[in-house]
Amino acid sequence: MPPYIEKPLFKEGILKPGPFTNNYDLRCYEPGEHLKPYVEHYFISRRRPDFDPDYEGVDVLSQPVVSLFIKPETAYIEGPTTGTRSLQARESAFYAGAQFKPGGFYPFWHQSISLLAEQHVPAKDLLPSLTDVYSKSIVGQTDNQLLLGLIEHCLLSAKPQYDPGIELVGQIVGKIEQSAGNITVSELAGGFGISERSLQLLFKTYVGVGAKWAIMRVRFLEVIRFARQQTRPDWTAVASEFGYSDQSHFINDFKHIVGQSPSQFMRSSSPN
Image 1: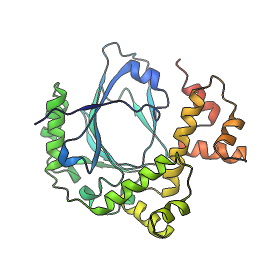
Image 2: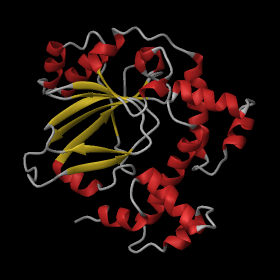
Image 3: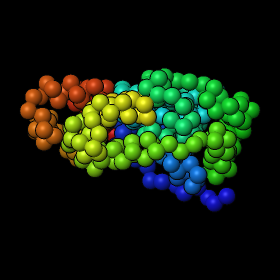
Image 4: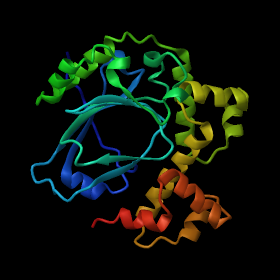
């Protein structure tokens, strides 16, 4: 089996990346060829030897995806969520798993991904090969390449069948990202020659969250990038830069996506 290729980390969604990087070694890898239609990447995170015992954990901006988490004490499927996701440092010194592409978990679940939204489901309920013994062999593996091979074998044993809806969802999500979130649901639907209702049903079925939320998330990733380039952001100017004429509307959307007000976010993102 060819080696799994390591990917550069995407840290924009980690609300306090500095302390997280100081305490955990997180690595992401490309999936093998047979799982590329479904899996965005594999991840392996290990607590660093000089881990700060007072470190509480990290909040991560959620994504319109499903993830598999394997930890020493449990393995579960996490559905998409529209809030932030908290990773508590005291829970585990190790975790690994897979982040699926938008729509990529549908062939493993075989029903609307909206039923998984805001849910944790025991992994062995959906991936029968991921027994307790198999899960422990993954957790105990120190060679990352062999560990990734075990995860990939588990996913392949589910025999996912490709669904053309995944490709369409991927194209639509790609369009949202290219627009930096500067697009409406109506424009998005029109660009793909489908009705808004069909677009919303497609997202409900394959992604599990609404298209409007996916657009807002991408827009606020851009807001975060923009704000982090400044020591003391002028939030009125930031709101205007991203098309908000109403400051309160901007703050409400910011809280909805990030889980904090803009000022709270900047404090939580500071290096200290």
